[in-house]
Amino acid sequence: MAQGRVLWLGAKTHDNVSISILNVHQVTAKRHDLQQQVALLLRAMIDAALTQQRIMGGDFNAALSRYGYARSTSVLYDKVDKFFQDFVHSTHGTLIESEADTRRDLPESGDQVHRSTTSSRGT
Image (tube, rainbow, N blue to C red; front, side, top):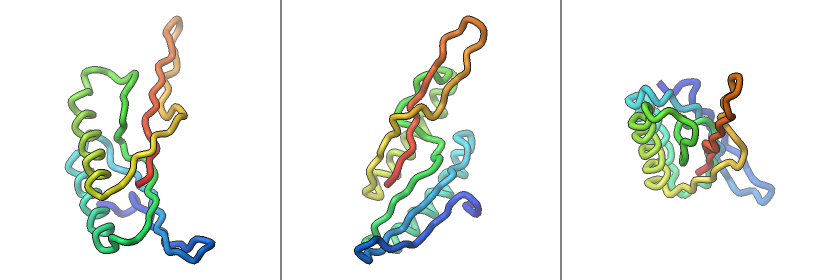
């Protein structure tokens, strides 16, 4: 399931310290069952190397805030957002939210632009 969704790179810093760099493209929020499978794989890999330093980024299809999203989808997004935040917390990660807009609706004639600061995060 995670094939093509997780890129895991081992690297060394200038000080010769090993570090893992991960790029994740999580499954759509509509498929929470598949998001859980990707998270289980990530957790297993993290648990196998607990002392390894790592940076994780990518598209997690989760957010800290949802400004501009339809209220009708709030139950769905609340579930995946909490799941992601719990995953980060349980793996002792840190969420870093982007200051740039990662979602921006283009206005139709006369409408205002809605912006969201959905996160690009690392753990």
